[in-house]
Image 1 (spheres, helix red, strand yellow):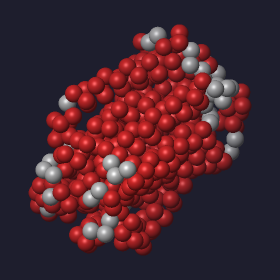
Image 2 (spheres, helix red, strand yellow; image 1 turned 90 degrees about the vertical axis):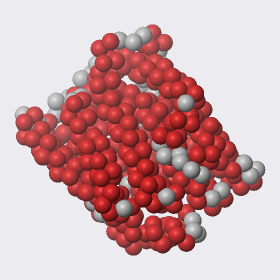
Image 3 (cartoon, helix red, strand yellow; image 1 turned 45 degrees about the horizontal axis):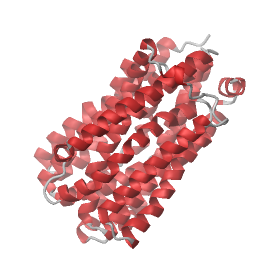
Image 4 (cartoon, rainbow, N blue to C red; image 1 turned 30 degrees about the vertical axis):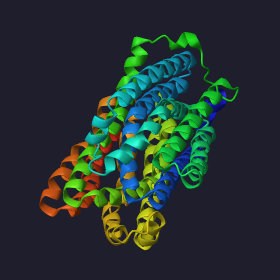
Length: 447
């Protein structure tokens, strides 16, 4: 672990951020591209309603797998600080507890998803003609979710070890596999949504197996040791407190999807859900660099917080926000210039081509400032401060966006849904900046 300590504790912050953020960005970018290609294929080869079906199903799969992500992020925060404090035994114990928790909880939730699939799909907006297509897709995807949960647990841990390239590979492999299988199953075998779901499920299995291979190999400094599977109350509580932030965030996103799909279906019908499906895919892909900066921030900040190097922590915060804001500005400019061309990739449906560009532009208006939100909540996770991390994480999706997406359409129709996004971004950024500034002034005083 000495090499890791030397790097995260002494190397130039900007170099560390680039080293951590670039692989994370590439990984997220490829995974997002995978979802985009999935949407393009079903939109072109199955139909417009297939886009709506994927928009309904994926938040359910991600809600279940977010349990793994929460355990991964919560545990990696503990591991980063333990490594910074040179406490490797705690890091190993935490890792073993993470594996045990992920497998138990993922299997339970997948069983529930199988038994109650139709009510769950209805809840998430599978109404009218969308339901049978969504059911066909969900029936396949659900079997790959435990693998995805394990992968989402392991990926932050790999970054906490200081191995961002392997975390990147773990995200690239299933994305490429899914694209190939989509072509084979949908185009050549003509399996429709069943083929799309099967391709996605197999790709989830591949990422889970790759993560398992990494931890079993000599490449990982953290080893899978059965005795560490025995749950330690203190460790589990800390994982749940910190990881609960990510689970609650995904839960808030899932509630948001319920509200969005309700408002979109009520005021615009199935076509509006398809419009949002396209915007959501573009958002995931285009915001990958900003998300990469946030992911790269976590191990650097967490290690230096554990090592009590406050000056380096403050520099990490400032440079992460600076880099992310520049990227966000470029992303918004690209959306302004190429929004019509982007939408043409997904569909040739005239209604979608006419209505999606303006909606997309509105949704992306606040993109230049969103890094402040992400780094604010990420800092408190890295510092092991669960409550402020939770509150800041919930600001956009939970506290602001859910009520706005429900109330504004009552007065402005579907347009109100689109405007709820930038308004929520602006409000949550203001609150995050105030809270983060207070934390820096109070607890990151230079030695």
